[in-house]
Amino acid sequence: MVLRPLAFLLVVGLGGCSMANVPAEDTGTSSEPSTSGSSPGSTGVNDAVCGDGQRSGEETCDGADLAGLSCPDIHPAYVSGTLACADDCRGFDVSGCTLDPGAPLVALNEVTSKGVDAGPYAGLGDAIELFNAGDSPADLSGWKLSDDPTFPPDKTYMFPPGSALAPQGFLVLIERDDAAMTGDFPFGISSSASETLTLADAGGRTIDVLTLDGADAVLSLCRLPDGLGAWTACDPTFGAANTAQTGDCGDGVVQPGEACDGSDLGGQSCASLGFPDGALACAPDCTLDTSTCGSDAEVAINEVESGEDRIELYNAGEQTLDLSGWILTDDDVAGYDPAADAEKLVFPPGTQLAPQQFFVVTKGIGPGQHPFGLGAGGDQVSLLRPDLLVADQLSYGADEAVVSLCRLPDGPGGTPTAGCTPSFGAPNVGP
Image (cartoon, rainbow, N blue to C red; front, side, top):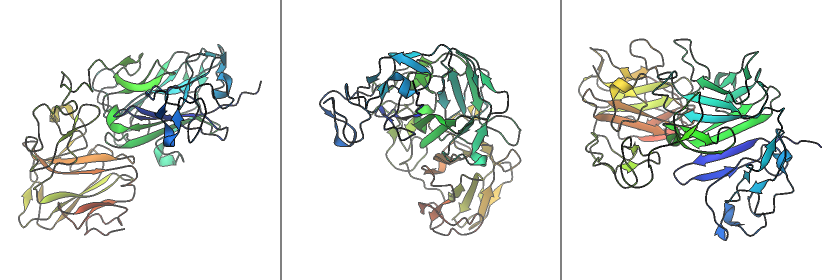
């Protein structure tokens, strides 16, 4: 039997529980279970009819039409069993497949975009967990992990020689802190935009790919069951078996641990959070979405760039601003607790910004530097006054700040524009 290894891509957006599988090779399909709920007769991918028993459009499979594939075609670790099509026709259900007892099966298993807040990995930054669902050790020497599928050196974690993952074992990697010389992967995971993580073996073969909405991983996004199941909201369990989220996010009622739920905003509004106007919303992970709230400040987050993590502030007013005690953060500002934000920048006493002056903040742990990274896949930066009211906020999507995202014209009234010519410390220049 010739085993044709296929990589699997599971696109996750918990707001609508949308999941899709895409092949990494030209064999015509891919793998991994998908549990979004298209029913027979409903409209599937690209207007194809999921449930009619015939693949059409971009359907991966449909009922008994499995594109001629079986369990061993999906992944070399599967040697037999019964392959099925997922309910939404966007992927395969491998729950009936049988693993080779002598083969490893390594997969991305759990992700957080806001860092772990308890346990041995608390306060260390974004985290990614791998799990070996097979029955033999996996040699990870030379494997690669990146948030860019082209694996550029500055955005890629290379597993060192001797790296291994035991059967049923967990491996937790954390975001690298260059200043402290700690951590593993050299990229951040956005908490407000789409991200794609790619895991490849030493030969360059794609092993696993996860595309997710960063907001869905603020606490934890994980596979259930470990290594094999579909992605869902979870309680953080990095280094241990995954468990489903115990809250009731999505039931429309704010419960303990939720800032909002659906249309229930917990009595909050843009005004109560310190914004002058706008319509507050609730994100899919039951955190408040302030992206449509306005600002009345004369100071603006004027330009950002995710490659070198630079942030520019600009005083568009006529008076010098005293920024002593102001906070710069990429954390969620709804219910913001500065004591819980280990990566914030608090401007030291005596920090002033003159009228029409630009001030560039670089990444680092020194005075006037910010210790958090800016995700290439999207992020949100907020400037808070000492009373924690929002002075300004700037959000961007995937790849919009790789070169420069700037306000045109300069100042709080300027329109955030992607692809600007970098001009940190000087007036902004458009694409």
